[in-house]
Image (cartoon, rainbow, N blue to C red; front, side, top):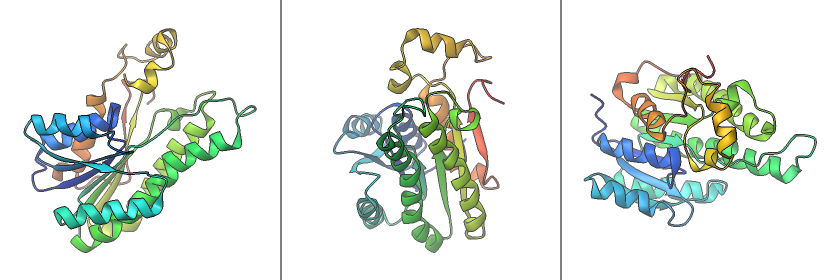
Length: 246
């Protein structure tokens, strides 16, 4: 059984979808969860955790603002004494063919999905090194592994999260800090619902298990990588995609 009692987790993009499920699952395993999102968007997720007997707090975070990231991490440590788990989940999509993609559509996706993960990781590394332990988990995507037409910016950002994790894993392994990646396939979230029913059905036909995944499928993979049971796993990509890409 996974037991995260006494651990403090910071989850970005925790207001909905995968991030909300991750926050809920970590709290269910005993972690104190700082659910981060813009403004108070994570409030419903936190209230749900509290109603279930878990421990969580709302954290207002703009992941593309480095000074805000540093202040948020400092605040979590001030309130709870440590930060054990960082889940870099915040992400956006601005889909367009490369030929027609505007530079701002490229820059916005890279800044939110990739650069912000580096900023958040950098902010937690020093306290993790000081406490000689920690878990950093990047939420990538099957698109970052296999590519997808019309999503060059998104695919590049998600592939970058894999490279970032593999490099950091080598840098901090001696300090008992692991860095891993969870790469979801097609998961039933607001983002995938936005592509329309026909597109979702087409994607589902490419999945050997014959269905889209649930946010909870990803959340349990994160819980495992955050646990003591995964202490000898670092620099790895755990694909949660129903067999869509192997």
